[in-house]
Image (cartoon, rainbow, N blue to C red; front, side):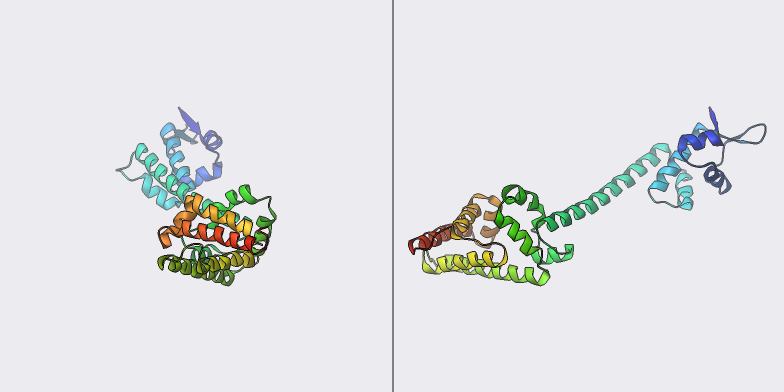
Amino acid sequence: MSYSVGELARLSGVSVRTLHHYDEIGLLVPSERSAAGYRRYSREDAERLHHILAYRELGFGLAAIGRILDDPAADASEHLRRQHAHLMAEVARLQGIIKGIEAMMNAKDAGVNLTPDEMREVFGSFNPADHAEEARERWGDTDAYRRSVERTARYDREHWLRIREEAEQITRQLASAMATGAPPASAAAMDLVEQHRLHISRWFYDCDHATHRGLGDLYVSDPRFARHYDRVSPGLAAYIGDAIAANADRAAASGRPES
């Protein structure tokens, strides 16, 4: 079976002019000529064209493709393996790009208006974008969530660095209080978690004592929060949760409503 230049052009989706050019530069020379001198392409020629087009899609130049296809150590199966390897690498690269774009989309939805480099600087290995969908599902219909997104959308790198430093300082002080043996219901521990509550209210949303009590429960029940605090000091998550509950009880006993 052989093909005319027009037939091969239609089958391959390239133009007749392209096939003529490939012939002129020696990249795809037809194996036959008709009695009238017209080009005729064999099945092997069509297969070579398939490889040419595949390598073109992978970004190779025509000269490089010629060298690859004329490599005596590479047969058709080897070319397919090479193309498969290049395609898988390209898929991985594109998936990385897509993941980065999705992370930025989620970060915007979560109210984090930072570049990827700034996000790494501020949050380190923790990526708030990874939890944006979960946050929307759990709290998206609450005023607190909407207020938090509105506020944080205005924050730049300096805001987030300040927020992080304040939060880390409170956490360090709580770990120190626990290390010195101060009970969770002690004035020292309760005053520190009160700073934590006010920190949330100042930067994110109005966090009353009832809401804060719920956060304290979450710090213990959610393994992710527990790991975050327990990495600072083992048992710190439970200590903070107990201190938050004690502080909420103190507020209620003093006549300040929890909600």
